[in-house]
Image 1 (spheres, rainbow, N blue to C red):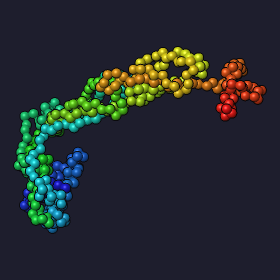
Image 2: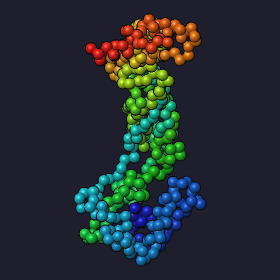
Image 3: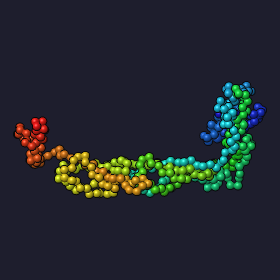
Length: 365
């Protein structure tokens, strides 16, 4: 919690009249009825809370003695005591206005074809860029910054409070200048003193072959420009690969289920299979079975940051006809009889070389 004296911008020895004047000045600037900016509402609450405490002699005395806490003044707890004794409360000095920007993450959807072969892509990115109106300084042209009167340019203020260990001194960032040690007298109207504005820009990237969902590309210095025109962070582009309606990826290989009629499986055939490289002729060997695979070498996924590609695997499924006319039924019966594969109609004795006779022979030998 912020120090009430710093919140009001007064010294710890300030009189009641000085505290009242400081509060009235801040209230006129921050009151919601006067300043509709929602970002100032929390600040107004802090100022009001500070005044309610310091304007009451008894509350102020308790606050100066530790704010009701056995470990120190308001906003001054056990951790602050430890900081003071073990180095955490040491001087840090003013923080710079020019700082590195944050990294940014954007997700891009691509289809399986682009993931396999790679693609050039154009990104539309909403991000922070340097303010051109003030040349990223955050100040109106011809103006400068002013040394903070509260911290005198140090960017921090010291507090002395009583604790169970005695009097302890620690440092805190100055609320008046937000720790910068100086204030901007006339902020730029375009960026409100931040030195940067939001803008949409276009970035051309190359997505390499072999990426998959979750893969990330890092673009150095293409993220948000930092406050005060500081160096930009990095931009990370995360891939989301849209599933293909029929082809499934597994590592560097692609898999496709492919159905063929029973006659083609028995007699063999040449069929056309749709791959991501286009239509490919595939030879079906006579007698192929369901579940067998036909591998097309080098038609799979491009290997990420390597040479070569995986394979394209065709998974064969033999279709058994479910609707036959009388002629087709008779033809199949004839074929079955010639191959001794089924019990002929009207027969009660197993065929001599049929499946059941082979099992019987195995048990009678």
